[in-house]
Image (tube, rainbow, N blue to C red):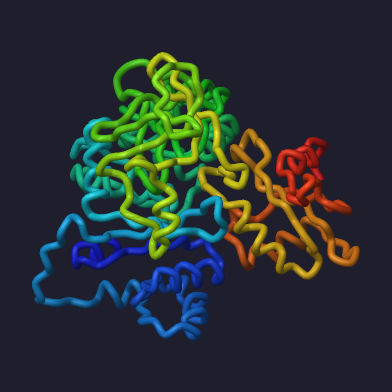
Length: 435
């Protein structure tokens, strides 16, 4: 369906199958969608949502049954191709618009850097509403004429079974998935482990991205698979920008150098380029891979650029010619399980809970998820609130990875002299044992 939309000159807006109706409705309305195409298994929940919105509705079965002899248009590269919704530091998710030219540039850069070939075979286990799955896996594979096998959902046992068959050549995942695969390998029998590891060693490339890879995970995976995972850096707005080398040394904790066709530099708080190593700065990117705009948000688009460079909001430092990521410039961005989450967006939803007077959401470092979504709450009228009750309520309104994993109820949130909540002090509330 997505490629049909592209080929016909339309704009594809991939949405998450895991998102509850309120999040789907927000994206559908914000994108001003003319048609919604949904798999029959998800039709009931989406149909009830669309009863309130006058939009054309098709199941994938109906959509793919349509045939036409009409010629397809010639699609200009400057035409909008895709809108992917991504969380930012300003609250609700923004639609990131990429053109056909942007997508082509992103794919050609990765084809060259990672040497995709028609003989490659990759297992697709990533969400298909994110660039990691859409561009890095599916589109690169199809562009190269390679084989891409789709899994309906991630299952570590099934993934290991596929790896053990030994016919995969490329594998891409987020750090959380590698941790789950490590746990699965450790629980397997000696014979099963041998087959699993042998399947990994037959691959030519294994990649980790979308979140920082713990050094311990990197080392353990090398012991199991024989691979030093290739770490890279990218985001929805820019595709991939930095990558460790396909051939050559990969240094733990670094994300390598700029990819082909991508310009990257570090800038200080005034916007001046940092040319010396060892001095932290914000990563800024320019080139044909960078997105066109935030959908119908001209002010946000203008603020995201300075002198033609996209301001990523990520801090890094150059060490030996390679970039090492230091973290976000905003405390309101949380990276959990490979997803980028806006603390402000979650707070906005949680404030509608009848037991919550005020709240503050933070990301707390976690070895499995990178960061864990945690919330500190000022209860309304001393109403008792438990984590289980909050999660049950939140799951109906937030994507699974946005649902808080820890809760602290406090009489008053820490604030500065101006009354603003101080997020570093909120983080300290979670320094104790688990709830």
